[in-house]
Image (cartoon, rainbow, N blue to C red):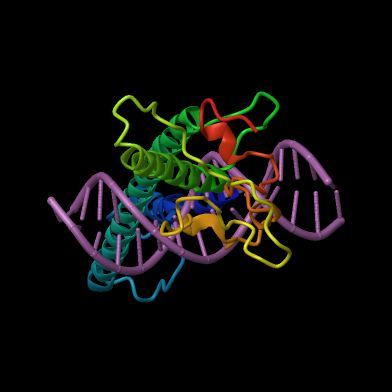
Length: 218
DNA sequence: TAGGCCATCTGGTCCT
DNA sequence: AGGACCAGATGGCCTA
């Protein structure tokens, strides 16, 4: 990062400026009317060639100055863009941090990584909506009894998956039609993801669906 | 020490 | 034109 900047600095307009200024200073230092300090071609000392030379050098100097200005402008734009990008990523991280605070966490857990947070949140939301959906189903089943208490959903999400089966498949007594979280399958090559972090029953940090359902105890 | 995670820089692309 | 967004590259830090 800083090395990049140092590279940029080394190739910055200073090079052009210095190169240009050297020739300029020599030009300015020497009297316009004399050829002192101009070792080249003492024979061709005519005013015409001298003015052509001057014009060429002025053009070169102007071009170098333009290049230097363009370079400075580009660099300033880059610096500003970097600053914006940094702020953007910071705000993204802030949002991620806010998301972490509303997810179930345990004291002995280290901070969730970004990808873990997203997958966990996805599955958490899915679990909560499943809870609502199943509770609603059960409530309708018991609607004949007006005074029936609201039953907790009869979820059995911690059923051990059979070997070779999808470790993230959920089993529920009433949720056969529901779809499992799409992020359950490990798509990342990271060990954490391969351990199905974010899937409630087999993740490396032992999160379980039970932790999401207050009052549920097994 | 390798691998994972992260912050940052950077150039490209799209949008306003 | 300038900002937002994105993905790739790079280097630092941490952990198994």
